[in-house]
Image (tube, rainbow, N blue to C red; front, side):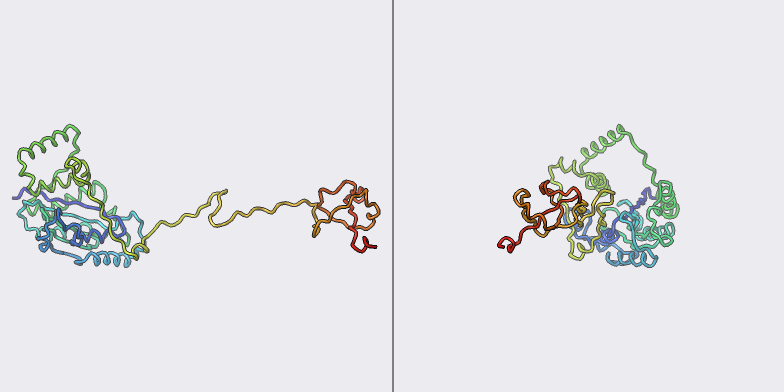
Length: 337
């Protein structure tokens, strides 16, 4: 019987276009992964096989949208789980037939999760044979990705079920749960690894050692790059089309001025009209010069009244009538006559 161990991992796929992106990787449509320095052997890509689903990433994403639309799922939150990816792997030294093993693995996935399978692809172009399965977490007409993955108890039950129904039949042993190590134990283990690699550098050429180192370096490659005097690679920006930019979802604008004393944008502040004195009833078209009451006493007989003159001399105040009594201004004819 083989002493190999099977590996089963789950990933939640979050993001509006994440199903398409994951499918592009699985279907080898990402050109950046096929260049120099890639862990993918481009000469062996032809050995990969699509077991379920379309052979184009756009079609996989379209199928996910179609299934959600048919179920009445119209809109999802930005942080919603839009897919669940299951990765089943065999060690590179395994003599198990990958196609048979992964075919039974797919049957187990379909029975255990009971959700639509969007895509299933066998990869034989890397060091270890492995299998990618993309699931649409559509349960009873709603997206339930977090419930589908579950908590630690469900993950343990998942591993047990996979071993009992698939792994045991191929002579595989059940993976042991890794215990959390204290700092002293971790330091000692790291020293043992360094000593082994220094004494036998050829071990770095073994595929399983290479994969293990890659897993360790991916979360934080900066310290190793610094030690090797290598620059950090530039971030590759995905080219955006005009249509993609114009249709990109954005946050709804929040109205400004919801407080009691705040003001909305776009409206000028309307100042209240200046309160006028009740004594200001009428306005003269043009104020006439006031004659001196001492020099023109004879011209005070004609009556013409106006108000709102605060600078009227006190001599024109009529105490009986309670108002200013101004003389009429002499006309041109009066002056000439």
